[in-house]
Length: 95
Image (cartoon, rainbow, N blue to C red; front, side):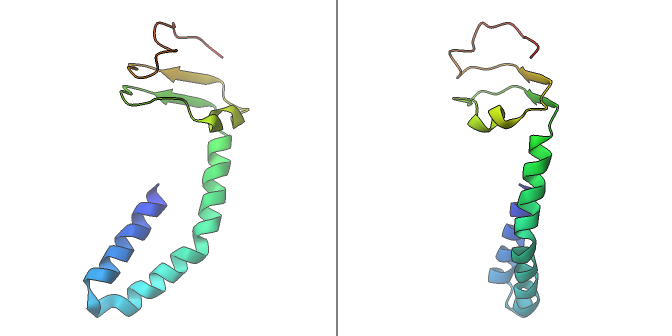
């Protein structure tokens, strides 16, 4: 997420500021080249999660399927849900 925000900011600066287009083009090229490494790192970090908390969620319709890939997940907590009808009324449970 942070990587995409950085890339979008550089792209916007590139489009809006003609004076630094050469520099911003070089930065965008560098970001393009490291993006696969960042994605791999993010996936590794996600897969190694041991705890996940989803708090005050009012627009969650369903849990992402990727949660099933979290073999190291020890604690999972969802609070204040209004759009997951099949989870409403369930008490907090430990996995």
